[in-house]
Length: 68
Picture (cartoon, rainbow, N blue to C red):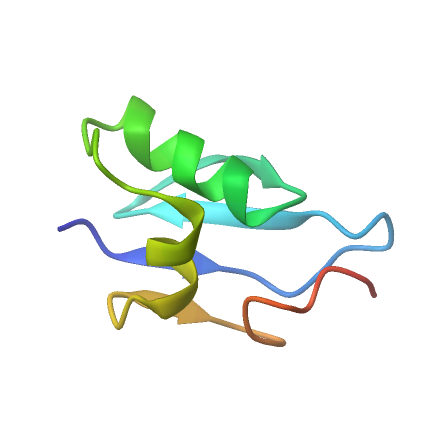
């Protein structure tokens, strides 16, 4: 499982996402994060999995924090 870091919300509510040592994009919902993980080869990841996973590090608020 790659290390996943979700950074604090930006002014527009998006959160930068890092998988391992690489930034993969800006997420605006849990679905976006799940899609980044699917693109990285984790086919069976759902938004609920992202919210509950202990391998996701949430900075600046948990899975419900999307506004700055």
